[in-house]
Amino acid sequence: MSRYNSGDVIINNLSVSVGWDLIANFLSASVVESIFTPGVHAEIEVIDYLDWLGQYQLQGGETVNFNFTKPNGATANYDFALNAIHNVELHGAMKSKVYKLDCISKEVLSGQAGQVQKKYNSPISGMVGDILRSVFQPTLPLDIASTQGTRNMQIFNQRGSNAIEMLRKEAVSPNGTSNFLFFITQRAIHFKTFEDMISSGDVKTFKQENTVGHSLFADIDSNILAWQVIQNMDAMNRVKAGINDQVATFNFLTNQFKKQTTAGKASTGMGSNQITTNSQFSGLFNNMFRTIVRPIMASDNLNIPKSFMPDAIPDKTAGLAQWTEQLMRCTVIGDPVLEAGHTILCNVPKITSESNNTEPEPQMSGRWLISKLEHHIARADIKPRYTCNIEGLKGSYQT
Image 1: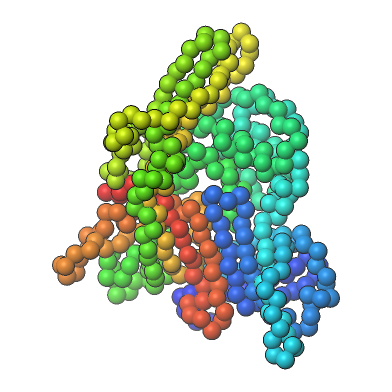
Image 2: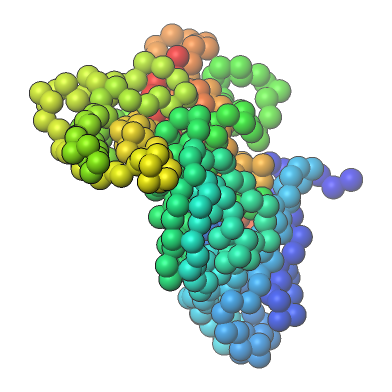
């Protein structure tokens, strides 16, 4: 039985649909998923001894299958579309070429190429599902959370990706008013809220050596190799996100305004004791609100269904501002079980002069939502070869 070290990786397949097998030519790769980007992006570095690039005359759009495994662990499988080829360099007296295959999710190309022209009278979740199936030509399962209310909408001559983005902004969850996000990972195409993401439980627990739960027999695979807090509060970003917005709805039938503010709205569910609560922050500015006006014409007599959207704007705005309050980045041993949209549990020691401290740091420890994830596979001479770079959101202190 072969012995593997932490950070080792097995490349099972790297091939292009024209019949080009590149597994023996593989050098390195970077595969990036993000909950804020509707697609997976990859750069795969290869070496070419026989000028296959010149022989196959690739046009773009060919399918690139990339499959790799953590030894004795999970497997990641991606079917990409070839977008471009970059950084072509000649090596060894011009006897070989090294270049990078720039790859994206196949659904990204389909969503840009396909047009939507259809009238709907259904929940937005139903519209999203119909557009994804008819335009995006998905090969992955669809993970679509339900939305509140029936909407009467006509989408006229829009690209599929633009139509999904428009619907994402209008969607309201029946369990709250959080923001919906549209993104793709290795296992599914997702259209869901922050609350949907954090309700599934943590996929993995990480810690730093000599910290909470440390043991001499601890698995290095769960150790945090590097950690950086990028942001623990940003008043300017909170203002730009609209934390001091005031939403006014104008009813054409009654000629009345209804006003709501974002102060005190939303809660991430990732912890308590926010750095500064929304109501406290808004109070610093003596109720200096920026007003957004949205007209409505909902009436039983006119048979126009309720959108729930005007009432949801304050919660959506405040929720997004709160979610981006705290941002961290860390590097861990690579593992395909990690995905954008999953949560992880981190145990980080509290900074203290005491020896043998096991008390967790209240800000950095706790649950983090993976907002961006990079599977980084380095060249074979670098150890550990396979690592994951994680960007995480929490939104408030964990107690």
